[in-house]
Image (tube, rainbow, N blue to C red; front, side):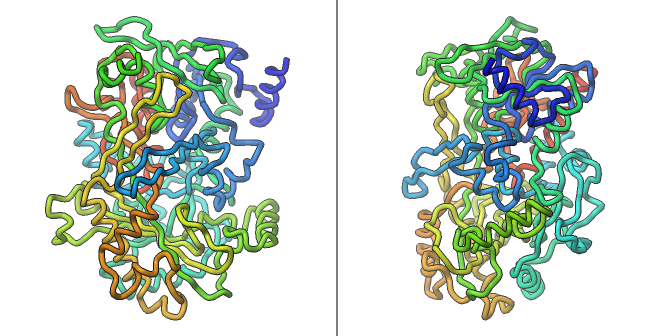
Amino acid sequence: MAHLHRTILLCALFGSTLGALYNDPSKLNSTTYDFIVVGAGTAGNVIAARLTENPSVRVLVVEAGVSDTGYRSQDLQIPLFGPRASINSPFDWNYTTTPQKGLNNRVLTYARGYVLGGSSSTNYLTWTRGSRDDYDRLAKVIGDNSYSWNNMIKYFKKSEQWVHPRDGRDDSDEYSPDVHGTNGPILLSTGGVRTVMDTRVLATTEQLSEEFPFNLDANSGDILGVGWLQSTMGDGSRSSSSTAYLRPALSSRKNLDVLIQTRATKLIKTGTLKGVPRFGRLEVGQTTSSRRFTFTARKEIVLSAGAVGSPQILMLSGIGDAPDLSKLGIKSTVSLPDVGKNLIDRPVVGAQYIVPNDTATIDPITLGEDPAALTAALAEWTTNKTGLLTSAGSNFIGFFRVPDNSTILKKGDPTAGPGSSHYELAWQAAFASSTQTPPNSGRYISNIHVVTTPTSRGSITLNSSNPFTAPIIDPNFFDTNYDLSVMVYAIRSAQRFIKAQPWNGFVLAPYPDFAPVLADNSTDADVVTYIQKFTRTIHHPVGTAIASKEKGKGVVDSNLLVKKASGIRIVDASVFPISPSVHPVAGIYGVAELAADKIKKAYHI
């Protein structure tokens, strides 16, 4: 009776029309579906929503995490509260990495969404598709022109709906309407409030236009330059794959079931098809010692558990590198040595500057210096969905390249082409860092520096055959001289930006941690010391189950079907063989929309 009561309560959170959300596997009315989607994250919810548009198709979604309503749900809804949702929260897997040899053997927190919506519910809302070059190269590597920019643009538009900023300002000079969708599920806009930095950033793009040109809309396929940050928010709140895709489907369809707080423990081989193993069942459980349940997929199991979760599930099912699996007592079912390899993630490091104490930054809220300011901001957001909390923390972002004649590129250029980026800069009107001890008071602005096309490669490997044991995560940051050199260049580039005339009298001094780097006599060694001490992940893992056209390489084919097997498709960031040189979430939505069409075509849905 207690289980049933909880189930009814969960259903009530989404509206009691159909009651299709469960937290107990034993309460589902069916154990057989057409499709089972593992992971109610960024991509998984797209697949579930699009497939259930056909009322004859029954879909089960299995999500390890919790609901995105109820306890602390404001942390997920309020744009400025992204950091609260993503680190050491009930909505996070709370992973950590191995000691990073390129970062003085520091162990990093490794946030991944553990909630309906996955990381789209806990990220910092940044919406960047990537360059034309990024997708045209993706199409060549995968061997399928449907991944090219000219085809993907329709899927990007399909996934999004532009809405105007919450403060009601005229945003006509902040984006290009012709490159955006108007009817898609994901709400998209520029920041909800202007900041004290905005006019200075724009003035710097005019004064230093050769190095920092203004770009009206980086989502046009031309990403280089400084432009207004576009974020996954609308009407003052976050727009996630749960709010945009899953919840509307749950509230209007009888053919979708969602099971939360339940982990996929392994895929079960059910026979063979055309000479390869077929996996038609999914085993799930809620704790290490709890009863196991199995669900059958008539057509496919779609893995959308992300760049950490999907390879882990494959390996637990005997799909991966056979010698590695045998060490853990796991019998090999499909030999795919690339499972868990090729992990690509981006290093990020911040730098802070002191500004006058009467500057209207958001530090009183983010540093906890003024509880009354937070109370007032919460009241405004609750009442009108306006104010400081509708900010994602930054209003501008920029993507750049090192010079073509730079010695950094002496061994070649790893980007997809001259329209792709080597590094990113962003600016925030607050003290922004997750690796430094924040000050108790003061006013600050921050620069963010990111290597967007890293050449270092890491891995996801099993720590145990127990599915409830976290895998070993090694992003292997700064394993190459190229990555470190680009980060040094990015920091030097940001210094040139902040020393421009528009910042005179506004930037008073660097924060003490950054002072040795900003000093006129600083060396590259000083910059490297800073990088090694304060770099963290920007949480963009991709590539651990890559798509490849080459026989004997990769994990999935151009249709994202697992090679040497039948019945399994992977749709999430793990399939990207090379990450677009921007933040990945818009690209994941686009590829998921494409994959949904591929599935519909395959089954005549």
